[in-house]
Image (cartoon, rainbow, N blue to C red; front, side, top):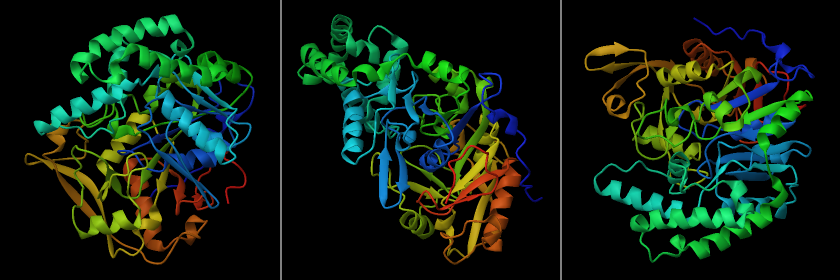
Length: 457
């Protein structure tokens, strides 16, 4: 069965002046274990929107965008910052490390990027200095028992845990209120000291408050109520582009638990992470590599810890944007991908790094699992069960020749076209874009959604 690249049926969603009713928003979501190239797709679309909005995660995310000869690695700042006139909004669902954020702002401004459109939710929670220390202590302790998750040690999990525990949580708005911050930090340091050691400066309430108040002074007017900001934009007919961090298979509820991140990484997290209801979303673009990668611990059924895996890793430069760690590499897992498409209600599939596979004689696609003698096409979002599955592969001919200059689907090698069509048919989503290189221009618009920056090339 071949995929049908049918016309977009949600074009009505992108008309101006509809407020919430018309669905003027677009979401870009990772469908695998992260690092799919979401930043590039956001970059392609950002110019056709009025704001790019982060709704989850923290500085553990790493989005790379290449514009001409310039490469930008963004961790907390939304990718839309590279477009003058497009607001870059950090929503309330993000956990913000203010020191990392300010360092990122300084780095962008030093390269001539205008950051005046960056706005941070006053209700976003703060990754405090002691969170990073706590993250490392807990990961080291788990590692001694062979149960380390493989976190980035950026304090993300502890910050989200404090958000749920409430009394020890600090929000970005608190950085502008010395008395509120002092009271919260004193309680937090008292509770963290037994975990991280009371001799550390990271649990000295006076020193911590001094550092964080300094960050608050610098962030100043960037700190706003972003929920009202976004709704005001919608009421005026504005278009919002939601930029997902991490990816579906790392979702705290729907991913390979417990080897997941601490936030809601799917389209389901947008409402809670921004205050914008899902009826505003007109299109969901799911981003997936033409193969699979994963960083850190946890099951990965199609992993290739062999020459093929090493070849793909080096050709695709598969090293973490945030951590620099080598990524685990494997064949594309269509069982997992179809699950992710289902969870997110994906309207358009974006396949990235297709060019990396050029030169392989054959391509393998996982189309089922064998689990305890039974065959299934259903993904298992549980690490213990997923670690027992055996992938069932379908093999297709590979393709050769460089494709980085291709800009039309029908100009791709026939084998590459067949590979993409098989992916689309299995996961039950039409392909919107195919990325054939890191640069902004190296993309094929198969079914453009109508709001991308023009021209794409």
